[in-house]
Structure formats: C-alpha cells, structure tokens
Image 1 (spheres, helix red, strand yellow):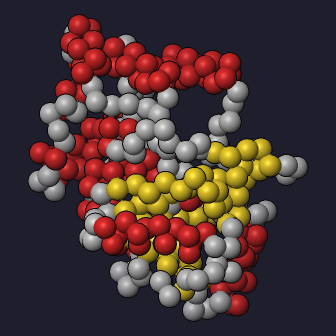
Image 2: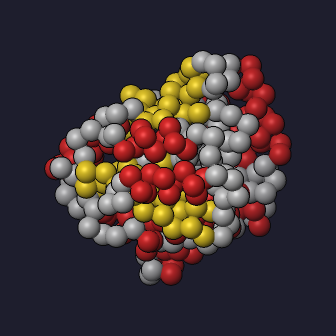
Length: 311
C-alpha cells in the first residue's frame, strides 16, 4: 500500500480535533501516518493528541512548539517530514475526511505519474462545506479554465486541506522555501510552485467536509451573484497592500536564490515592480498580461488591479 504522511498544524483546536483525527486514521487503502505540529495551543489540544498517540504510537507523531503562525508551521512540517513516504497530504484540525479520500487522490496522481514520470504533482479537490446545522454547498467549483502558473499568480483555487503531493513536489517546495511574510498563504504558494514546474490535478468530487465556523482563518465563498460582484468590488478597492505582487516578487527571489530566474517568462517579468511604472505602461502590461482568473469578471478586475496598482 502507498505510504502517506499527513501533515497537520494545530492551534487551540480541542473542539473538533478528535473527529478529524478519527477520519484520518480510518483512511482506506493506504498506510497512513500523521505528523502534527502544535503551534503553541493553550487549551486541551495537546491532551487530545497525546491520547491518540498512546493508541497509535507508530502512526501519530507530535512536535510541540511555540506559536509561529500557520504559514511557518506548515512549512516547518514540510521540511521536517521524512523522505521515505510516497505521498504527503495536508489536513486542517477541524474538518472531516471521507474514508477513501487518500486512496482516491493517489489513484488520480498515479495516473498522471504514469504519463509523466518524475514531475511534481499536486492533487486538490472540491469540499462539502458545512456548519453546525447543515450542508452549505460545494466549494470551490470545478475550474473552467486551465490550472497553470498564469492562473496561480492571479488567484488561488487550491483548498489547502485537500492537497496531496508527490515526492518531486515536496522537493521543489523545500528548495523554493519562501520568506513567509511575503506570501499570502502556504497553499497558494504551493499552487504557484507546483504549477510552474509540474501539474495540478483537480478533483470535482468533494473529499473533505470543510467546517465553517467563527474560528476559520479563511472560509469558502458560495455567495450569490449580486453579493459576488459586491465582494469583488470591495476587494478591489481595499487591496492596497498589493499582496499578489509581493508574492510574485518572492517567487522571483526564490528562483534567483536557486539560479532558476530564467524560468519566469518575459510575459511575467514586466509585472515585477509594475507599480513603479507610468499609468500608460501599466495599461500595456495589463493588456498583454497572460494572467487570468477562472471567471471573466474576476479577470477584468485583475486587469484593473494592474492599472490602478492593486495587484
């Protein structure tokens, strides 16, 4: 059976953690292990983890550390994970996995590995969003356009808690370790890096019950049309920090650190330090930019974000 290491970062997650660990341990068709890094919890999280460690001492491993934040915590897990596993999966502390989640993911990844041996691959899927009372909906929707570096530099369609990667992906992520203050989220960075060197495998089938509650750092979006447009306009107006641009520069710097900067095509190069250019130059950059989002409306706002220095 394929050996899979699940990476989980916990922080004050006592309310839902046991249910999630149970759903991971019972995964079918794989030899699963769970590596947890606790990010300085002050509730009963460590007691719950230690209970499960006592039941599964050869399957569950704990690194208890000080609080450094979710991005650094997950990257610590990536770097700390041993290389003798076949695949690596990522888990939040408060979701629930369907029993065949890892088996299904690995089947789809293996199919791509047979076609293109040795390339980095990242599997992700839709989720079934739910709260305490009901199923809210399926999120995110299946991509309408190709998942590529040109999409990854514009938006994130990868839900981190659904990701499964192969060894080549892990190696490239370790090699391109970012300054985490310069990236938006670890899953978005992984989408960028793997799409640049390999391939993204999106599964329309929801493999995770994605819990929505007040403690979510980032939640799904199933807004109806009018609210969708309003939220996009609000995001455009408020996005003065240019976080995507900062993330693009971090990618360029990470490639430079590895003498791989030429991988970024000339069509992306003008976006680096685009905000320092004259407005007419920004218009040309926006028109010629190969970046795109999954929806035409979002792509329009992307172009406007370049023109008005909101990218």
